[in-house]
Length: 335
Image (cartoon, rainbow, N blue to C red; front, side, top):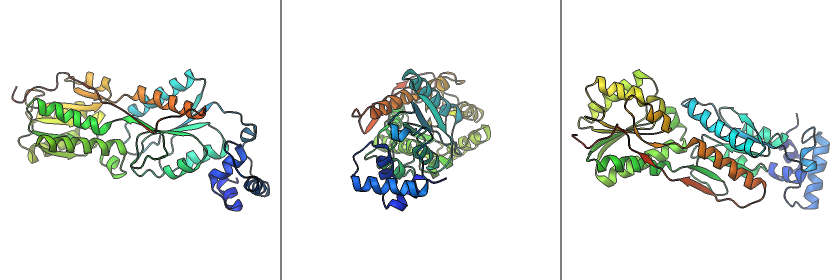
């Protein structure tokens, strides 16, 4: 099948110029438009069977890029997907899921075929390989997450750096002097996932500001991983009295592991988390936490994308401020 990149190569222009020339969404010189149209005819390129680009009609579909990669916690991904679908249906749009794990093939396919009017992108990396395509193609996009260079993009996310700082501020205010971060699985950091990296930055900055002894460790999931990281932390930081968890499925196993090692929560160890509120509230010891507002983020992403489709101005980056809810898992040091 002839692709938009083939037409761009034949015409000597960028794929985005081909899209604009065929859709009429942006002004293109007559000479360029004729060159693109000639290349498309020569190669037998078709936008789609319904001629959506030629007619200017909308698909009334939003694409949601949810790459199913190692280290992804599926229940949280599901929350994002449900919130996007709910918000989209309220605006008379359906949602097309793109679950390819790596690269920009899915987004490119949607751009080429006109299957969707815009795309919401999740699991954003600091240097995300999808960004060049998102910047160059005609498909409007919103990112749930903020890359290192966000110029020219529309992004929305929880302020994860501020969330890490807020948790450490809370623990320091309770008198704790040695804190640890039990973070996401290692592969999440290896691919430089933005939210995980920014939370580490906030944790480290706040610990330094308060003069706390600290350590940050990635961790897999499951009881064996929880036990191993708890043992390592107590070995490396014998004065440890406070932990921040940024790994949703590890909350209960980690509490259990510390209890088996003689550390009661919160009598000997205060524990906070950045996770969905239901996870924190339902833990074996209800956990003081900053909620990941999946429903609000999904709804905001849809709102921003619909505004972009209508031609209305939107902010570049929207960061939701973290809110900490105190529960039974934190107490003053030595309480």
